[in-house]
Length: 113
Length: 115
Image (tube, rainbow over all chains, first blue to last red; front, side):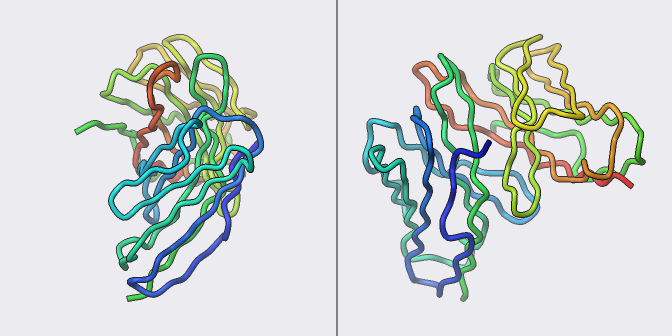
């Protein structure tokens, strides 16, 4: 079963604009992670936010987490054409002492030059 | 540079063949995972392993098995390949969840076509 559901499914913006992507999930989590995938390649980890954190920054990335609403958002500021990719949220749920990442269906981001 | 390496980028197999997909990681990670990725369905977990000789079923294990004889290697086996197993297969590894950030590292993917 898929835990994370991203929204929107596809996003098209102009270079320089900000891109906001959302993720909702169903059960309690240890952390939530965002990944990026270029066409036909593996996933690359972008940022992780723990369940006791509300906001985190990494370069042009800002992620927020609202555990009361079971939702997260990823903001990419000042987007570039090279940001064109698919983005996935992944939740690491409570499974005893170990990790089990469950991914959403992904968001396709297109940044027009 | 940390790495997860999958043995093939592209693979074409015939229906009924036994198919082995190999994955090797060099980060001494305990956890390893196999996902398949299909358009509109995202990544779905097939099998995972928390230690050598250990394996657990994910969400879609039917038609697959796995082997973990060494810590660094996790193999996905399609016992009798079928056309509905045509997909992108992704291997990943990470550290155990207790007291560690569980960032996953992915291989480059194997695009399997069953004809």
